[in-house]
Image (tube, rainbow, N blue to C red):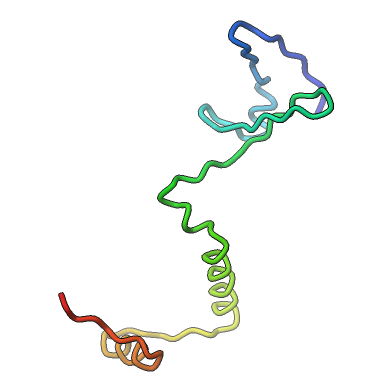
Length: 101
């Protein structure tokens, strides 16, 4: 991409040229990290994860996702269509069902 020049305005504001915004698929409200490195200002688009979704991105959960993808790929699945089959599956795993509802 070609070099672009922008002007620093009041309140230290700059406008990112539209071709850069479009090229990086940026939208109003997106977060950007700012780094000063070797006398340069570097803006890096970041993805913010909502707190109620953060569990999905934990290392342990991602390992489980990878394993689940392997299981699907390798056909290591159990087809369960009834409640009785589900109970039998959990019993075979040694997981007891809690019916204290």
